[in-house]
Length: 216
Image (cartoon, rainbow, N blue to C red; front, top):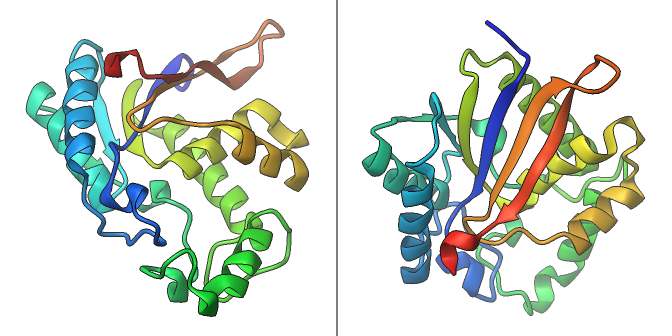
């Protein structure tokens, strides 16, 4: 198995009902009508790529997006929990953004996402995300396939990309700035490669980010 020259096509899922509601999205939120249209368009685009494996987050919105890709390409999904979206505290799921009872918990969770050692109830925090994104990159590097399409979620895909862009210099402050200022569209296509740099070192590189011309 060759670890060098791996190419990973990162695809954010189509718009979900949870994306357009004013509530904290449930894990089983389905695609919206627009999301299904977007999924069909990205499937048509992915069908033009050469790839060996289709890796998918097991949440419903990513599953439904991947179904369109499977229909177009015949590639069956390989579900993996490493690529689920950031995990919210249980008490937030399904609650309205303006629900006064969860406002403080929401603020605490946001703080935990960018503060090492701080956790809000059972939600993921900065340390969890750094560890999971490292495991995700290692998994992709060690995977038997050289060319992979990965269907995932905006925040966690950007977490992976922040690890690639900043490497060992990624600080909580830089991570927060990256997540706040960088936007990934629904079904946006990004490309990363594991390859040698000019010094001969094997590293991950971001080649393309958030190409959504298929939606034009």
